[in-house]
Image (cartoon, rainbow, N blue to C red; front, side, top):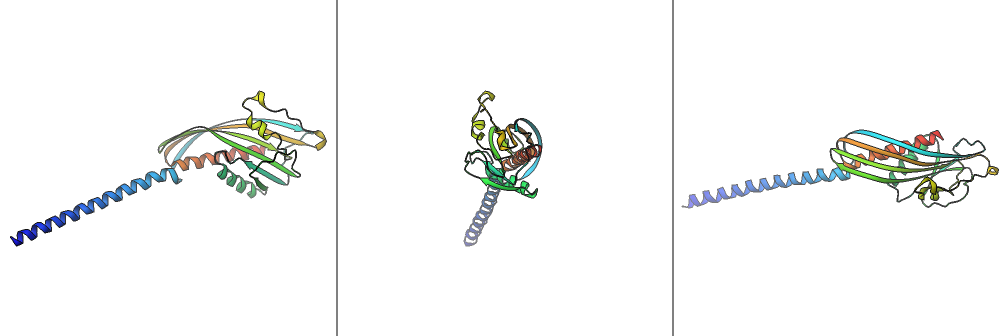
Length: 221
């Protein structure tokens, strides 16, 4: 009886150990799944194929045959309420400074007539639509673009707030101030993403596309 009792106790202990190991394995699997799913929303990972559609409607205003040439400094203003504001600031600064452009950030817009020896770039990004699952995603953004070669910021807010062309402000460039150039309008960027990727990866690619559009437009001015 003693031997039988001991055998039964041993079998019970073994069974408990096996169950404990199963529970540990199960917990490890659950934890791994949680980490993986979380990474899809917090880490930029994945393999992505992208189809991109863009359109632009930029209006130009000139005085004295202005060419839109950048001045000694370029002031960049991206409203904190803009989508991707911090990331766009970083990308634009690095890219422009690598090209030898002296850039300065503005975090509070002071609408003045002119900034001496400086140009001004104002950007505001809105998200029109967005959808995401790990194997597919779509988004659409509108980018408000405002560039003045002589740092004229006085029309920025009125243009940004206008919902139709009829609401755009009347632009008057004083020829006595020399050559002046103002480019203002919108980009629309729509992306379709396939593969297997995280949402931060989709956002990262979108931000790069938006930055490229802005830089390309600056080069055209």
